Image 1: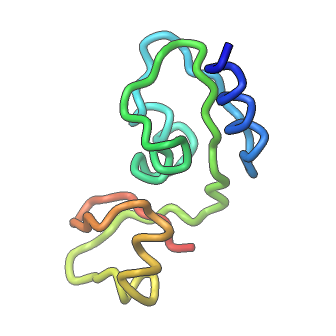
Image 2 (image 1 turned 180 degrees about the vertical axis):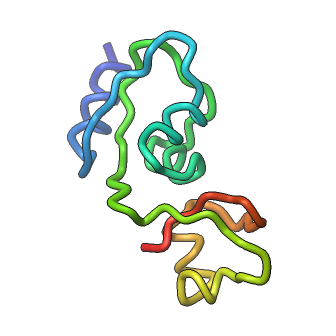
Image 3 (image 1 turned 60 degrees about the vertical axis):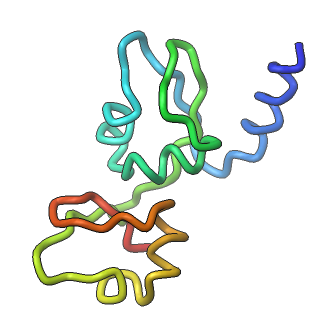
Length: 103
């Protein structure tokens, strides 16, 4: 029962849409389907790494903010500062080909 209460608290705090995980889906599958970086999806859902069928996820709005990093770019160039990059993307990792939020 305590799991349900905790879940309800998390879901009510969700500012975006909710999604129920289907059997066999991974965090990367769901993130790609909604255009959200996996690290952001994980961070917005309590740091979840493994998903289970029926689990409810809070999907943050993508609204065209997802971007694939190219060579020569930096956190500061894309987001204004390393701190803002971390806030938007839920990680300090940064590499070419990575999908990130620009804000």
